[in-house]
Image 1 (tube, rainbow, N blue to C red):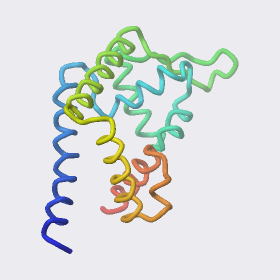
Image 2: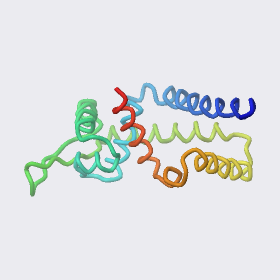
Image 3: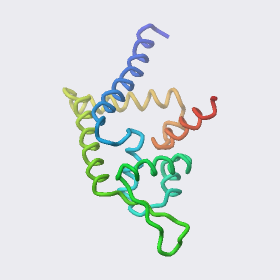
Image 4: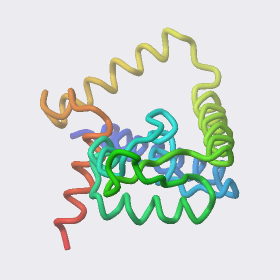
Length: 164
């Protein structure tokens, strides 16, 4: 491996870390933890979903969803309603406050993304996508290169929980 490849690999790691920091700073003060954002987005897009549906869709444990939705409920972002046909089942809905925060967070996310690619041509972005796909396939083979992002996140979280 050449020194240039090692530097490039470190730069990729650095880019992801800087991007994460910038996004977290941009979302700070919105009243939404960055890990709650996908939960709120799912609830908005699947109004009336259950906690188990949410856990399955996001590939996380029901216990972590229960904790997060309880915090989000206390913050006024979501509500839980008992299902009329099944009293054992609670349905989740985003509040107006939750929808407004999600909209602001989404807009900030896209501003950060637009800033990231500032000065790049469409052709350069296309070339970068192609190179990134090759890098992902090189390191993981076909199995992970074709996985959905949320499945990769779930796999990463699973490995994290097994390490200790």
